[in-house]
Length: 518
Image 1 (spheres, rainbow, N blue to C red):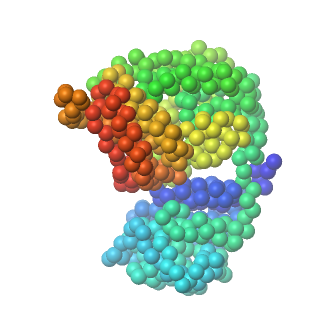
Image 2: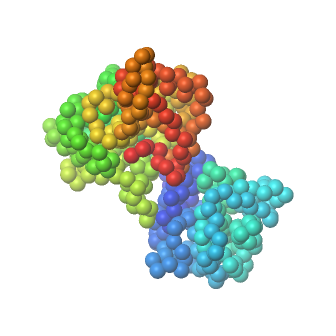
Image 3: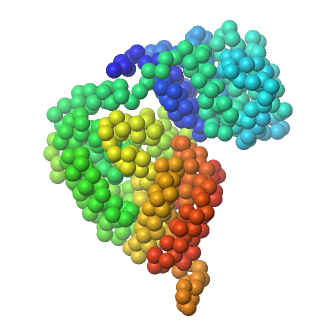
């Protein structure tokens, strides 16, 4: 077992970039531990954390902006290697006497760079071949600080990468953490292993052992309640906590009426019969549907479902004695998209399993996966012996099918969508594509179209199919599904699902679209 204090660590200071968590994920994939903290993390805390390297993230600000996030020069004087990305590069230049200015020509998206020196962060790169990188900046460096050497350039940016080898400061104007950057992972590896001399000693086996010990010590003889959804996060959390404290864990599974076909039955069977988890099942479907009647606004749907979930959960929790802790399968992406977590990231949407419950129920939070990514949780699940069918289950939104029915939610529309969605899932699995996709599902649109079935004219609903490839849900590309698979899905839905006579395929990526339609 690896002791937590012996881990080689990378510290990421967040300046509000939408890509900050991608940096952490890429480093964790190299079996090196890292943490994200806000840009104003004190020097004292940095020393206490004792990182072997520091990464300054990108961000939307200008170094000359009124409320620009700024660090003290002393962070750069600790003798710890620093990598500045995008805004991080501009900030380092600004602090050390370089000049940053607002360019007439912005660079956003894919850009070709010319690497000038195959050393340091570019160790092993071919200087005779241009690389495609992901840019996202308006400001750029006009003059480098004294002591810096240019390592890469573009036609628009003469200082695309630079380093001060004496002070161990390394900077790039592009985003190596984004999948579109060729060799981006190698750049991060060169920094983490080549420059910072980190060892790959972060693994999920040791994480599990630490968590089991910490959970036992924290919980003592008290009970823990967990809102079980059947998704990967809550499922793995339930099995982990159950392994630590047994039936002191009380799982509450609420049927909110917007679950997929036969989902409630599958969850009950899985946890009661296979994992010996103390599971309390509550069928509140009619209660939820009554509250959702006539509601079309997506955010109102989320809030109603979140509020009602709290009410139902609270009612059931009060029946359980000796409860002190509330556990949630909260992950980094949940938190980042819901609140300004550890920094100034923008709120994108509400998320009902983050916040609300502790305040109402006066319970302490137990969130073993709060700073883990989905792939790390899946690895934990495998270590715990959970079936691949559960571990590889595609993400499913907390508000369930409510966000996949555009417009009003009714029992009739839910039944239609359930049947269509089950066909999508079964055909994707039959084609061997399920585990290759981040998500694949059906969406019921508030649109009707004319069709002909037999000799009869129909006027029925339109169903959209959504399938995306992604590594982290922050970005996603629409999946190029084989035409024969799409054809079978369309044919089955139109022939087997009464109420749908037209199927369309969503070919938009994130950004600018979102993965879900609402």
